[in-house]
Amino acid sequence: MKEVLLSILDFFGLAWWIEIITQKPHCTYYFGPFLTAKEALVAKTGYIEDLEMEGAMDFHVFIKRCKPNNLTVDDDLGERIDRKASPAFSGQF
Image: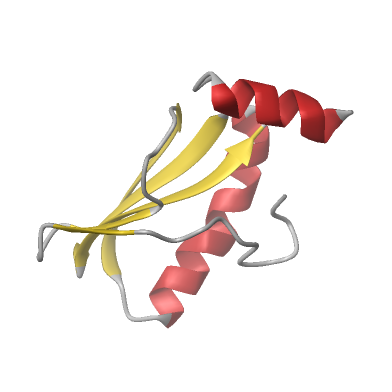
């Protein structure tokens, strides 16, 4: 039931997402969707750790309701990278 509600909220742009903007590389990443802002807040640490392990630095993190068209945007190249949502760690839907 929770997954159905999450799909509906995501369809209308009302689901919660984690937006992480890194300065090196200059990229924007979206992780989600989440049913509540609290769930996203709890999960953000794992995503930051994953990005740090990949060498990303200088993070700006936002928890917000949105409907991202692309999950990764490489701002250095002006390139939108199509990436399907897939769990990065066990706490994600």
